Length: 340
Image (tube, rainbow, N blue to C red; front, side, top):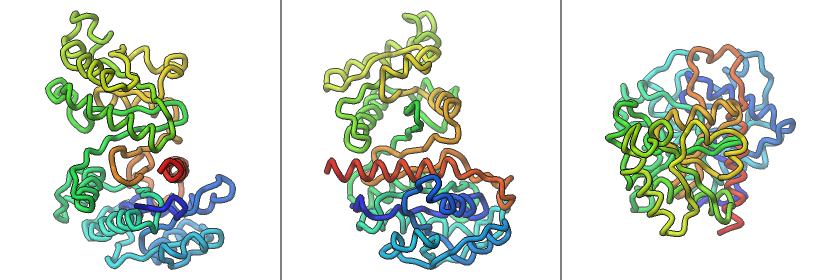
């Protein structure tokens, strides 16, 4: 596994999006924002051309993971890929699929083999990958596949939105709201919460994490007056988790569990569906919230935004969420190194 003293491996994401420019911007703010050492897996020429087009002065060093940390103070270390990348801001191209996937593969391999402390990913878009034959639902599922291949064990990835004021975890993610009640199971809530509790202890350094669980329906169902899922599905999961010694409570009405006084009572919130978790997380700290994948045998963080094709190449993309993702990955690696 990755050494916690090694640099971070940052994937370029879809190069037609804002990945290359926010990587450049994060490196330029390395001193001002105390950005930890990282190397970018991408195309040095593309990164240089993008910086030039934006009028940004930057030193770029073709690197390998072993010397990247030593170069970071004076130049942005870029580890070149074998696959070529098409430089066309705002115009996603399936020809970039091979390079996008290669960057992810290399980052994961570097982390498993100790050359990188953690994986940080710039955003990708699904359609260009699907057009090129990619058969995984998304980024996270592919990372879980790589982890399973390497370890020989099944991996269940769990998405956490981690900000300075809230850590929120959705049990169901990218499905229609109408499908949530059918997809929600007691077993899924138990497993999601177990993984969350484990990673809060081992990676976030919280000795006994307190976990709040939301209800599904308004007022957490109000005793069955507004739906039965809260009592039939959610409450049995909470009771089972308590029996395992996990400090968990709920189901709580979602409309009263995210204000400041309520948040002071827990370390993470387990939510029943995508927007129930993401709306409060993004409303509280849009530019500082980080997507963290729990349940993997390596650390993975990502900025909590997409490829932003509409603003790519215009010089207006903000690196705040990427910087937050880099800093959190560094902190998790350091905590994990101390606890192992």
